[in-house]
Amino acid sequence: MTDLFGKREPAAPLADALRPQSLDEVVGQQHLLGPGKALRLAFESGKPHSMILWGPPGSGKTTIARLMAKAFDAEFVALSAVFSGVKDIRAAMETAERALEQRGRHTILFVDEVHRFNKAQQDAFLPYVERGLITFVGATTENPSFEVNSALLSRATVYVLEPLTSEDMAVLLARTKLQIDEQAKERLIGFADGDARRFLNAVEILLNTGVEKVDGAFLEQTLAKNLRRFDKGGEQFYDQISALHKAVRGSDADAALYWMVRMLDGGADPLYIGRRLVRMAVEDIGLADPRALRITLDACETYERLGSPEGELALAEAVLYLAVAAKSNAVYEAYNAARDFISRDGTRPVPLHIRNAPTSLMKNLGYGRGYRYAHDEPDAYSAGQTYFPEGMPAVEWYKPTERGLEAHIREKLAELRNKK
Image 1: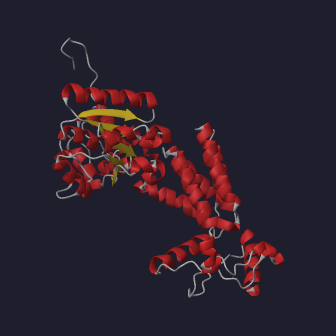
Image 2: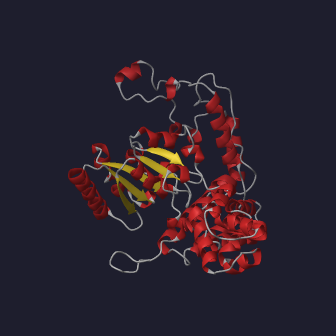
């Protein structure tokens, strides 16, 4: 392919060549883009608004942002938080200013992987969003509640995108020229794991081989390394994280290590595994061995400092520790029981004797009256003093096990309850 001056241009990757040119061409996300659904209505309104597109890789975040610019006849400026800094943000804003002043065109600013920007970098967008100079569209694979600062989040609508289904992948495949038998087709769709870009890149690799029709054996041979994560019948990513979690819970150190390494070998994000290990530390070990939480957090921090492959050894250490640690889900069960009670119960007032009394008026109203300071009493325990709202039924949500540190906690709680 050549341009007007005869210079050869690189051919566009298949994923870009097949990028939808209208909403009707978008595959998947019909819960947002179908007739009468939220994002389609936003497009049809003619009034762009800032948004965060939260979804897995290859679910269409960039495509939707580009279609917004086309639908609203706006400039499209894209930044990647991986490669950009405040200087790039300022340059993008200058581009938006020129587009408005010289051509009267509004700008859609698309920020890919916005969660990788720090708070100061995210704050840099706020004045321009508030002025209306740009419509901000951020794309993230991480929960925006934790990764996008509240000021920016409050000015944007969050839309949750879903991985593409097997049916969606079949539609994408039909738009290509690849000839493939049914067995290989199912294997290829499983390989993609709901990621359209990954799927089309694999299709392009297969097309470039020049084979007339792809069968299962040829698919295995061509994509062998990347297919490892889906071997033994094509199990999916979340099946493997489930296997890792259950191996840890079942105290099988070798099986836990096997599943962790399988996931790493298949291309899983090591920090995703790290976050799941933190969850296991609090859900399945808890106060039976509180060191487990610290070890998993340290493993995540070590990986962030060292990266792969050195940092993966810290994750392996954490996996093995979790597997052999004493197990307890007492904290998990207590939390769920308390949350369930609160969701069904009314708003009970705080008892007067444990209210704070910073002013004389509050003291005169009885705030803090009768409160007994625990440190002034034997064993620093005010036996008989109540801390629950008046009239609330007696509860014992936390029931420590007899394993690990919780065995001692169990004895201590029994002693305190006897003193009551």
